[in-house]
Length: 291
Image 1 (spheres, rainbow, N blue to C red):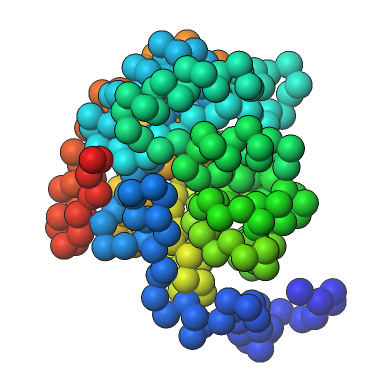
Image 2: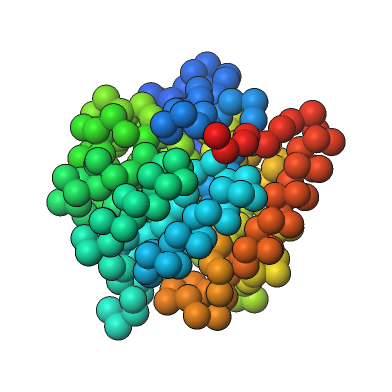
């Protein structure tokens, strides 16, 4: 956007024009992305669930087995965590790799985990089914370029205050390296409103799906930051046409080392999955089932 341009109809049309490499013609149909044997962006709705942070073998194993039983097809879990305060829990790092592999082998689920530094690729590549780029790293172009050199799928979260156009252009930093396996994730944006952690921008889901061929999923946990509201936003995303969800689940949220206030309990997640099936059924859609 140029400085000092008056806001008028012509400007709005320009602002909503798809970026050059992702034209409207290429965005006429979502191109599914495969994460192991799971397809995201096809006719079925995909649910990714698990803890914000992997805290211990026991916590990760309990959560993984429960969310698979309730319908999750991919497992989320942070090995490294980017936190606002350096005093907050930063993740277990490499010491968790051994037991993470055990849990993945037991459940048969692929892991979605955040990468925070290009130097982590060597360790994470054989472990994860999909890299996650968090909101703080959406503008980390060195990291995005590095992920463009891999062929693993990348879940790209929208930055706290990023425009949809900036989000799409961030994805292009990955595609120019040859990696087309990108899934966009709307996770709420920072606005003047303080009654919730972020403001859930459901508009962005519709715009991103109309302007790109990437699947789009929603993170209702970060979008609202309040456990009791997460399921309703998840259902709203399904109705709006999102391709799936990534949601935080913890067996005992009060004991969580990060973001316990927004994590669903195991029972909350079971109920959400049940409600999702009913809502999707009314829309002639189905929920993807774990193998």
